[in-house]
Amino acid sequence: MNKVKGGLKSMNVVERLKEILPENRITTNETVLLNHSHDESLHPSSLPDVVVFPQVKEEVVEILRFANEHKIPVVPYGAGSGLEGQTIPICGGITINFQEMNKIIDINPSDLLVVVQPGITRLQLNAELGKHGLFFPVDPGADATLGGMASTNASGTTTVRYGAMKDNVRDLEVVLADGSVIHTGSKAKKSSSGYRLTELFVGSEGTLGAFTELTLQLYGIPEVTVAGRAVFSSLQNAVQAATSLLQVGVPIARMELVEAITIKDMNKSAGTNYTEDTTLFLEFHGSKGNVDGDLEVTKELFTGFGCYQFDIEKDSIGRKKLWEVRHNHLYILKHANPGKKVLNTDVCVPLSALVEAIEFSRKCIEESGLDGSIIGHIGDGNFHAGIVLDANNLDEVEKVDYVNEQIVKFALSVGGTCTGEHGVGLGKMKYQQDQHGKALDVMKSIKEVLDPNNILNPGKIFRLD
Image (tube, rainbow, N blue to C red; front, side, top):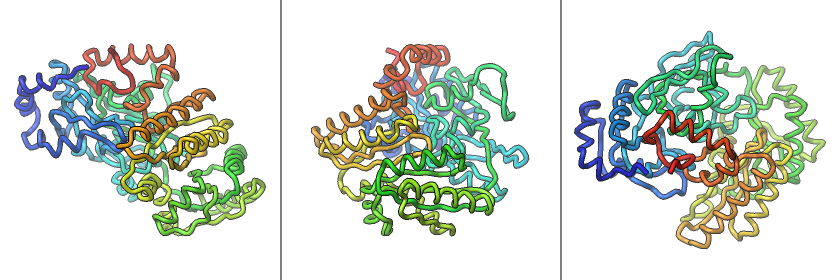
């Protein structure tokens, strides 16, 4: 599919790109190509033919015009922190690295909006926003770029309160395959005008266009932030307590489920001394009075579901430590199993099916004979089973694939999705027909209209051949 490596060389594509970009922002250096051949997933690497580093929209326009004219594959690239192979250039071609398009174009405190280029990371953005008493809430854990986060509809620990990327992107400036430039939305908070193009492009994984500008929703930094841990004697009690908290309307900012076995690994690797039982990691945002009230309601409600320990962290150091441990779950799991890899699953189910889904996943892991742990963004039904394997052991690879498939099939059977936040990329392509049915044909039709030569990240989400 659009595999044109030989064609690239015969066309002397680098010389043509020099007409668009300075030579120092075009490279075929072997190390740079290797760095752009993989992401954080277990999917096989594949080298691009050339990597380019644009600085302005006009350069992206010319790159895509050139690539479209000669049917050369193009893969947009952010920080390479993806987990489903989205930025692996399986067809070779041109990788566009957006790291030099990392500026904040405008901060508008009155409208609670910021306009940024796609290469800025969320931590870089929040460092600047803090000077204005503002922050951008979407937190997938990794310091990903905002363009990459939009491309996969990233979410994470704060989704229960602030939503995913689709809920916080007001407008996108997008360069289409032929070099045309469009805006998908506006700066208004709501609109009933036309199709919801912003939500179409958010989550499109670079298959419909390249983002060159994002307008994002901001929030005021809360007066008080308190983190905490609630420990339960059973998984079922913890999930039921979390669901009940949402039902009574407590505006929890983060609510993460961590299995007992994972707490044990955390203590060993991070030097913590957390009680090794099913735990909810929590965070509350608001005024002092509101947070105090939310804490009181939460503790009382959780006690009714068998919570036997409720600890809070009010100072920034304690909160930072708690969430660092939670975010580093994947690396803690790897550290506990040196020399091995971890497949991180990513299903999302209705809250009513969450206990059953997690118990089913735990049973699948145990029956496979492999090690693994489960954590979950319990407030929105999204959970991850991290399964440990020796990537050189074919038997273990097959077992992991089987466990992943069973977890996905169960999620689909209860009305869930094969991916809650990691995206489709390469890893979840085989489940698209089962999840979407005839709607998948509509998606393919949209792709064929916007990218008739199939140059934009070909071979991701679904195949056209």
